[in-house]
Image 1 (tube, rainbow, N blue to C red):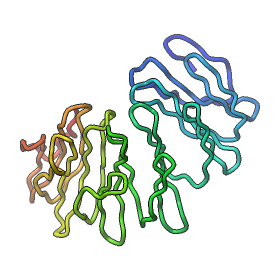
Image 2 (image 1 turned 90 degrees about the vertical axis):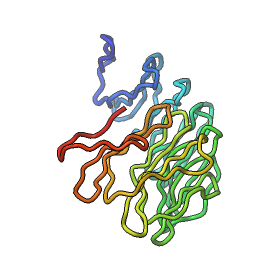
Image 3 (image 1 turned 90 degrees about the horizontal axis):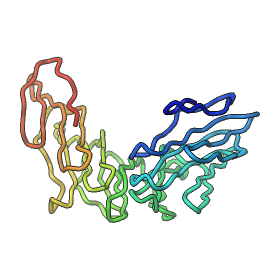
Length: 249
């Protein structure tokens, strides 16, 4: 592994590094003599694991969280905590300070969400979104054909027939997602403490390429209104050509 001109030892396998949000720290899994370890910018962890898991940094770049497998058992190293889990699904979520965690799991044919050790009820499907700045977790759940967004154990939106392209900023101050309504239209819903309730945008035939500003309450996306191709930036509508690109912040 080469980082900023520095070369690591030679291993039989090295994963691409993960960098902290501030860019000053990094971590990468490596394999040596049939076992896996984790190297960082200042340390090496011999995990004696047969499979690497996940590695990530907290939003403030101060904490490193990683996991590894021994058989089917996954061990998550979370600060000074060691959490052992099985049947985890999807990615691991942490809050900005790296003091809380959340992950998706299976319970029979249902999904459950483990939020810092507390397990939710089972649902037909769950889409985790991320931690809010107050330490509560935002996620979408489906029972039957309908989706709702929850904050911990309280639903905070109306019901929709689909929810996708969900985003949250690193600080947990703004979240947004695309939803499909009962009449087949699509709409962007934005959550922010600046709003008394979720802000629901205009309805369009199709919405894709939703992007969220890193720290301001600003969203942008591509939309189709009948045959018109549009770029929406908050409440401002711009016409564009058929082959217009995706918006970016």
